[in-house]
Amino acid sequence: MHLNVSKAFTLLELLVVITIIGVLTSIVAVSMSGSTDSAEIAKGKSYQQQIHALLGHEAVLDLNFNENGYDTCPGSTDLCDASGYGNNGTIYGDGDEYISSPVDGYALSLDGNNDYIGCGKIKDLGETTVTMWFNSSDSKLHNGGITFRPGLSYGHFDFNHDGGRPLLYLNNANYRYFSSSVAGFMDGSWHFMVLYIKGSGQYDITGATLSIDGEAILPGSTTASNSPLAWTGFDIGRMSYGYFHGLIDEVRVYSAALSSAEIQKHYVQGLQELCHSGFISKWEYDLRTTGSGFLQVSCADELLSFQREMI
Image (spheres, rainbow, N blue to C red):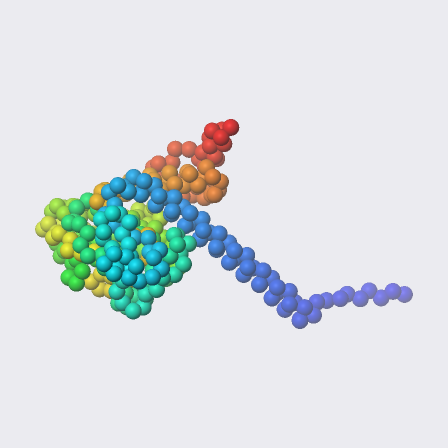
């Protein structure tokens, strides 16, 4: 007579299996996260290169933060301006440091207390496009971004001024809130920002636009009255109410306009280039371009067309 003996897993064996599965899941998640971050940076860099190709000849400030040291630029400044205008930057504060950046060489880490970059006076306020990479996980109420008039109570851009809404403030009679919170971009990942200031006329504030990663941040309440005053300086990482806490890289200022429609168009074109190269899937391409107003063909058609050109 044979006895049927069923062997069950012991509690210890189950715990070992669960632990192994957990470790493998963590490894896969980290790997996927790294791939996603790399893809996001690749898209942003393609987009950034297109903007620079269009406006590069209008650049009045170009900082790449790759010096990896202090007092390395003319005039004992810390950051060398590649625009040719000599608007070199000086790093202020005691909680800043150079770190390796996947965007381009090195980036600057600011502690959110009293750290910022001063570049002196760049130009008078006119049609201006400011682009920069940022990486922060700090969603505090006031997260300083850019100051146009250092030390005064007006002339700045604030990432999170009121309930997480960005604010472009030229003076107490000319300012624009943006309606969408950018707290979702304070996620510890790299993002590419484009800020456009139309000019210094009485109602020019109504033409100001903001986009992050090619996504237009819709304008909100706007006050337009007296003409703003000219710029007296340009700081990065601080504004009247606070300092930026996180990483900053590749800051450029152009004395030219790039509208929100143009920004979105070039972002889509950058995605098409990535589609050509097979770096993004049809699903991701369609997801990011649906409703953009610039989508002409699908990712599959773009890729097929590119393959035919190569034959």
